[in-house]
Amino acid sequence: MRWRETSPVHRSEITIDLGAVRHNARRLLEALEGAELWAVVKANGYGHGATNVARAAVDAGASALCVVTVAEAVELRRELPEARIIVMCPTDELAEAREARLELVVSVSGEIPEGIPVHLKLDTGMGRWGLAELPPPPANVVGLMSHLATADTDPAFARQQIERFREATEPYPHLTRHIANSAAALQLPDARFDAARCGIALYGISPFNTDPTEHDLRPALSWRSRLARVFLLPPGESTGYGRRFVAERPTWIGIVPVGYADGFRRDMSGTQVLVAGEPRGAVGTVSMDAVAVELDRELPVGTPVTIVGDGLLIERHAWVAGTIGYEIACGINSHPARARRVVVD
Ligand SMILES: *Cc1c(COP(=O)(O)O)cnc(C)c1O
Image 1 (cartoon, rainbow, N blue to C red):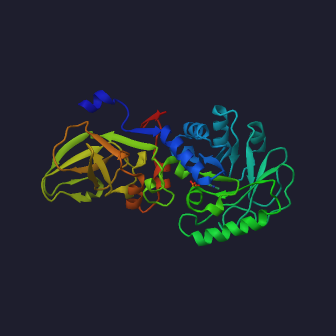
Image 2: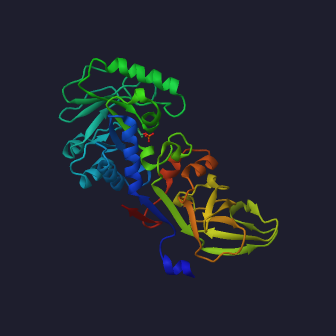
Image 3: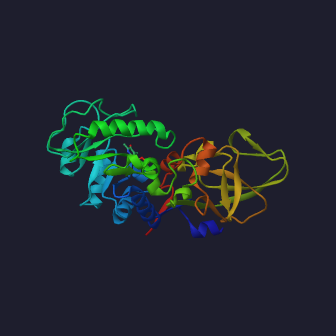
């Protein structure tokens, strides 16, 4: 059992390539033509590990980090004592935020907190967070922002939002204006203003749910496992819950010890993985801890399986699951009790 020898504990391995993150950051900086790059590392860096990604992004020229909660920010602050860190969602943890030298975003009406740098967020069409109108900014306001609803799908509506933002912020040229996300940074030059908040492209995942290499982005995450069991399924026999795959002829099946608790979602049934480098279909119901793969021949236990990487895009799984790369990435569970995470610098 080679599997036992090589990996007694971990059922899969997630590798994060920080060189790819730095490449993507430089690629974004190039597209931004002088506007600042702010690296969005919320949700544990879209499942990639916030601290490592943040450090790589800063090394490559990102000048601030954006997260969603004060707790996420405090964790980053421990590792990056000098970085600008912006908390994008509303919070009442003001004391903690001041203590950790964070910047806050005010996006629902009410008081603007004092004694801490603040960005005012205007709703220009996202219809989610955001003030209906910009109040006259007090002295601790450092930035004005908005968020685009359709930078990836409807550039015409995005341009309307950009124009509303431009008009509303025109009286305050001394403040840092930022509206662009990854999709806008890559394809809407009008959205650049002074800074862009980019997440997904930094990880080398396409904001357009297409092939990221079209924009010269390099996927940073790969996810690999091994065949943990191989057997021949006789005709009429099935694999997995619900008997959703029944063999029509004698069929070699490989069991990969990764399931929906690890982020291999149930709606990824039917997607392809690479077994010994060759594409093979995941068949039957994905269970919590395992997924079955149809093989074309008997292969040894321990044969490498790539779920993401080696040219297999996270986007492909997103297409099968009817979702976007963002959601697949955020769902990958790299808790040490389930997987091993390796960071390559
Ligand atoms: C998540 C987020 C971003 C980053 O969006 P990407 O599409 O990942 O680049 C930017 N701004 C806000 C307000 C966000 O919540």
